[in-house]
Image (cartoon, rainbow, N blue to C red; front, side):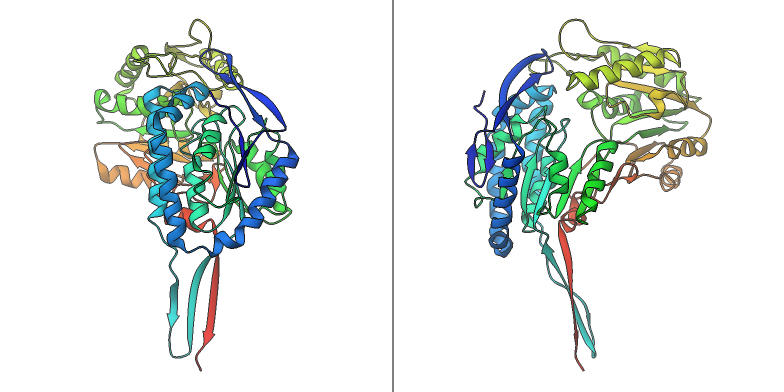
Length: 468
């Protein structure tokens, strides 16, 4: 694999030091990759700052062509990127291929957008025009659960808007991002996109850097608070997509055999390491036993293993810290409820946990109240949808949620009262590049995706001209 290099000012360069990348399926060192120093970060920011005026002045059609060329380069390297992603992140190969292909599609979507001038008023007394201007240098910080697709939430929108970018992948999943740097380095002017990898020690420097005008961050709520605090001194823009504790509310009349596979998929995709995964299921008492049985059957049938092995449906957790956290939550839940599937680590090396279903558990248990971010789902019995919405809204998180019902009018009414950025009905965790996405409460600030997500990388500029 590799060799991997940083991308700074249009050049592939060595890091000032190196760091190991661990394969979570084997716990072995996969490769040594470059580790950027603070001095190299400063070089990347300086390059991005120099490149900004010319890139901002580049016609949007030319920026659009660059995004399309980047999409072609990513998709053209599909197999290599996907296999690398499996080895550094853990997800099954089919899922990794979907993530890479999806990233290319997101680049193409943003290339289809425009930033047109809007006439707010044109009357006898005045003409008011609104334009969108780029901000400058943008810091994009991406987590380890979906390093490629979440990069594509940020980079193409920032570039289309005319910004230059410092992209920092997570310390445990830097390889695919560095590979993309190699693929696209000649498709953009030097300094427009810079990619650095670190050992979780440069995020604060990016957030506080005086020459970075916006930070787009996806990650934990606790780290998001630090990003916001670090950005405050320079009053820089932030977009924060943070943690979630999404509730799926399943009402009476729903067929467990029909709904359970969809809920299971939304809870356990990427071994539960999804910000908008179903993380707690509130199920009506009339179908509670049947739903628990169906979820347990699906959990027992899941094939857990190395993502490069044929037939595997769930890979390992991505890193040892998260692995140990989830095991701790499962152990705590054993005294709070009844484990009916899974319940612990799989045998052998690797950060593998069998998909776990816990029933007869209530609010107040750590597994229900905290974001587990792993392959374990608590199932809570409810008497009615009103009570379930109240309990779902009691969480400090508000990223997403879902209502499962036969009566769509009833579902729509309950969905309108959920305090979340997104509510799905009879589905969960569906995202598309044209649909805005953002969280409420402790789940985030601002929006990504869609025209709203593009606008977040701009400054609105209003011209108000008198006519008489």
